[in-house]
Length: 222
Length: 222
DNA sequence: TTGACACTTCTACGGCGTAGATCATAACGT
DNA sequence: ACGTTATGATCTACGCCGTAGAAGTGTCAA
Image (cartoon, rainbow over all chains, first blue to last red):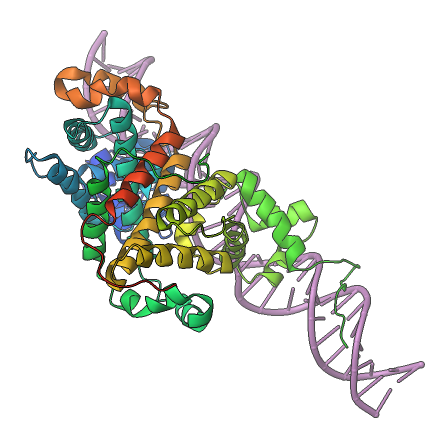
């Protein structure tokens, strides 16, 4: 049993996972702004460069933290009803976001490649195929479904679902009913907004609209 | 009485907007990673601290860049058909994202407060009220609609819609049809994916699903 | 023993945001 | 005219950051 702190160059029981634990914890509660390789080293009492010996860059360390977090998603088993399965995946991702709000945004930067993600993908694509969609539509809608769920979760984390908190409040209220009557009419509803219900409602709308093959006509999309 | 325009240690016609222009350009083509106050100063041939004299922090400078970019959204006039109006807003945001892919993510960090955004909000909420939704549902679904559109655009920018490009390819292919048959069946569809069509389809599904949950309930606000 | 290797640490470099002091000039009060 | 003040621009310096490269220290096989 060795316990050297200063000037010890003997390799101790240090491996990736120990460092990863500390880094994960730091990122999870300090956020990316408060995260640095040097701080990870400080927390563990080791030289910052030791961290980079195990993860060849900060970016790689972040990627592995993200993989770990995003791999911890908890999916219920398939239910046999495709609508339910889709919704379960959506709920699972949102829960994941709530569990790790400070690092969920990494989902966009580092595309998920873990087993859990492949599993959720399989559920989504299976559901869409079961719904009777062509492979082309299933692929596009499946990816769009992810984008929607991730977008909702990110927006929620970043406070976009609370438009009346923060500096926007007075401005928004000051707009007045004359200029933006519909917006003004919803001010009380914004204040009372229930995120869970909004999520249910939105996911429900998306899923309900899937079998409808008729596209909405409008301006171009390119 | 006061003109207060050019003044300096050595004569210089500098104001916020000139600096903002340069900063915008830098961020727009170098991205946030390549952006720094010092580089903005270098580009303009001025001291970095002069930049911070006009914008009291880097964060504030970024916020104003974001405001400018996000205020440049181009919305078509209301059409009278709520489905079309909703889709037009979605298309406009996606176009904006394509126009400024390196700074679109700031939309999540700094909530939009510009006039253009209030205008688009008004269109969205009006559309949802016209669709017959209660204020509660209109508020929730409207915000969710934004989250969806922003999420799609961000996902697109970050490459999430191209799961077969980059390092995921070999892994995903290697999964094999035994473990993830639905996913495997879609591999050709992923390769041929048309983002525009996926967007149309997804937005169409969302919109189509909106009235599905509850019948018309209350009058509209013209 | 000797050598190869793995792990850790040290040193140093260039870049970052920005606080605080300083300087140059324009505008104003007299 | 003069000095005073205000204001913008600059300079200096501090403490952070990621990380390249060298060097130290231990383990183990030959």
